[in-house]
Image (cartoon, rainbow, N blue to C red; front, side, top):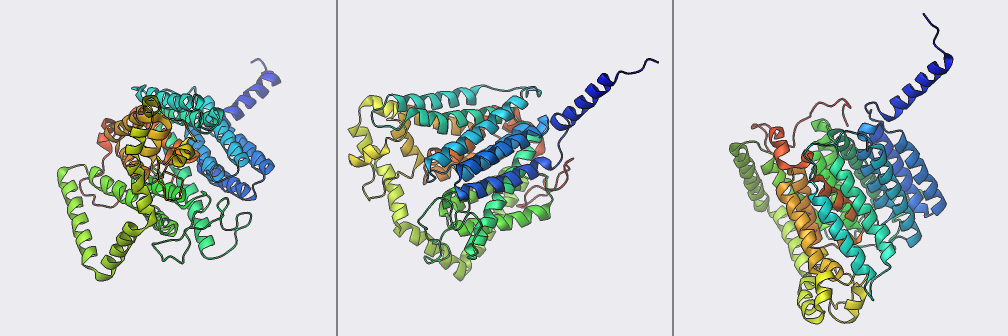
Length: 490
C-alpha cells in the first residue's frame, strides 16, 4: 500500500477542523455565545466607550464565525437584536447608535453569507420581501426628497439596511435556526430582568449605574408613583417590556425546547420584569397574545371551549375578589386620567388636521423620517408640550404617507392571517403596542418587526405547516409540554 503523503494528512486534518467548526451540528454553545456576548456588549454600552464597543463587536463577529452553519442565521438574528437593543436606543449618543448598528449589520451579513449554502426552504414566497422592500424604498425616498426630514443616508443605515437584512434572515430560517434564536433571545431577556432587579434593589451595577442612556426616571403606576420604572439595558421601559413579552410567546410555544419547570420559572421572572417596567400597554399586549395562544394552541373544538371556559371562570373569580378588583379598577381609572392616555388619544385626533393641512403628495408618500418636529411647530400634531407622536400608525402617515401605512398594514395583516400561531401572536402583540409606541422609529424594535414579517414567506411559519404540531386535546391553558431536542434542556 502506498504511503499517504504528509501534506494530504495535514490537508485532511485541516478540513476536519473546518468541518467541525463551521458545518457539523450545533451544541448549546450557540445559546451560550449569545448570552455572554450580549452581556459584554451591554457592559460596553454602559461605559459608552466607542473603542471598547468596537472591540467587543469584533469579538462577537469572531465568535459568530465559529457557530455551525446549520444555526448561524438563528444566532445572527439573536445576536444582532441583542446588540441593537443594548447599543442603539434612540436616546443614546449618535456615535454609540452608529457603532451599534454597524456591529448589528455586520453580524447580519455574516449570518447570511455563512448560511447561504444551506438547503433552501421549499415553498418560499416573495410577498414579504416585495412588500418590505417597497416600504423601505418609500421611507428612503420620502426622506431623500423632503425639505424637513432628517439625513436620508442616516435612515438608510438605521432602518433600511437592518430591516432588509432581518426580512431575508426570517425568510431563510430553519427549525434549528428557530430553536437557537429563541434560546438566545430568551437568555438576553433574562439578562434584562436580572439588571432590572439589581437596580430596583438599589445595588450599583458596574459600568451601568441606573440607566445607560436616559437621564430622567419615569414612575411606575403599577407599584405606586414613588417607585421608578425599570428599563434594564434597553434605554426605555417600553423597549424593556417589548423584549419581555416577545420572550413570553417564545416560552409559551416552547420554541426553546425546554422542560415545563424551566419555562414556568422563566415565566415568573419575566412577569416580575414586566411589573418593574410599569408598562401597561405591554401587559395588555401580552394578555392578548397569550389568550390568543390559549385558544389557538388547542387541537380540537372541545379543548378550545375548555380553555375559554377556564379563562371566563378565572376572570370571574378575579373580579369578585375585592382587593384585586379594586387594584385593577385603580389602574384603569389612573390610565384614563393620565396625561399618557390623553396624549396618545390626541395622536388619532391629529389625523384630521393632517389630512386638511397637507398637500396630496405629502399625504400619499409622507414627509420622511424626522419630519415630525416641523408638524408639531405648525400645530398639526399634539400641542401638549410633548413632541413625540407615540402612535406608530399616525407616525407612519407623517413619515411615509397613506401609501406607506397601507404597506405596513398589508404586511401585518398577512402575518396575522397566514402566519402560524407563534407569528400571529407576535403580530397581535405588536399591533397593540403600536397604538401607544412609535415602534419603527427605534432600531431594534423595527428589526424585530421586519424579522417577523420575513417569517411569513417561510413555509416553516405559515399556518398550514403547523397543523400537526398543535398541543394534545387534553392540554389546558398550560403551555406546550417539553419536546425532545438534541440540544437538551434550555
